[in-house]
Length: 115
Length: 115
Image 1 (cartoon, rainbow over the protein chains, first blue to last red):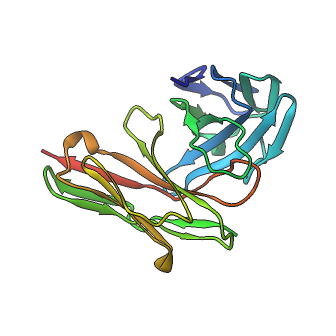
Image 2 (image 1 turned 180 degrees about the horizontal axis):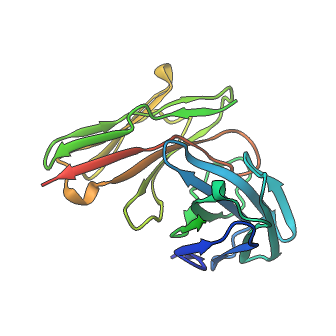
């Protein structure tokens, strides 16, 4: 079974702190994604990566950056956390599939609170 | 632009009732894929089904069934004889005809099944 793990289930940080959210998958997937989930807004794509050291902006990249140094690990970085980044963050991974649609495998999520 | 609309924010039913979750999508792609995911209280999104745009056959899996109608751009999900364990947030998602496995999610429908 594919396993996607996230470093923390719950995280509380102060405004202005640098925050790292880590995601690791164990199935050699090329593509990895970071989403944030907010009530009434569903899941919105922040960044994705289709290979090591490759990254693409999603729909809401402002205030975030990412790092993909190893195939299995995809990190989301909040350079200076703000209260409007309080949210649930979900990581997902998928095999490279070209244009064919494939299901994404999700981690359990990190609920981040910025005070 | 691609869009997925789940107009039902929350649905409450009593156990054993049937319930249908609506999903309407918009895309200009002729080839696309539709998905349903379940998010139980634990937070992790669980893949339920994938449908490509060329396959309009309805699908049944146990108590779950899906009705895909291109004429109305809808991909509705029905749970027959609902159970308390069906309580979750359900997301409909769309992938268009691009090389990256990006999904566009709806805002989700929260289903509450009471005993």
